[in-house]
Amino acid sequence: MTETTTGKPTRSRAGQSQGPHRSAGLGNRFGNRSGVAFIGAYEHEANAQAVFWLARHIMPRVWAMKPDIVCLIVGPGWITGGLRRRDSRLRLIDRPVETKTILSHVRLTVAPFLRPAFGLQSWLLDSFAAGVPCVMSPVAARGLPGLPPLQSLVADGAEATARAILRLHSDACAHGAAALACRSILI
Image (tube, rainbow, N blue to C red):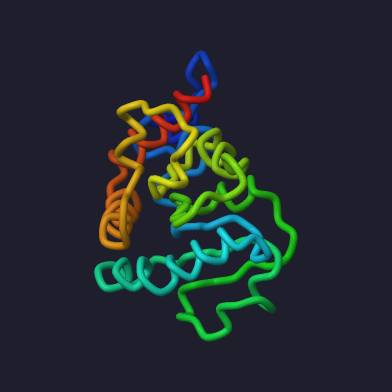
């Protein structure tokens, strides 16, 4: 959807969201979205390792540059399993919630896996389908097509991951281009 000069939304022929300030798919404007999300259960060791890496090494770098970014950790087991002492900007959502609901509110997701999880994560594909870019470690990107547009989403190490998060969270045009790239691999 785009807005006409009267402020009324319009749709393209294909029904896709239009304009660089829209996140493709769910229709929520870039400006109405905020934050980063990791989606996955604590019980899987690869998830726990990724979230601890995110909380201790990546997000502090992000917060040093942009302290208002909130990071959601979504999935069962996080409240009882770990991260009891954490920065208040790291928010745990332990109750059942649809991935679509989370994806309609955040600007991007993050998959900083240090070791392989159990194959390609379904929520990663949900994120792509919703037009929500995902900053991924090289391990998380395994199994995805090596298309050049997706390479900008692959970050190796805490510093590179933090820079990618900051770029996609702050730059509507970069976010829009990444969202289109994500959706293009699913077509």
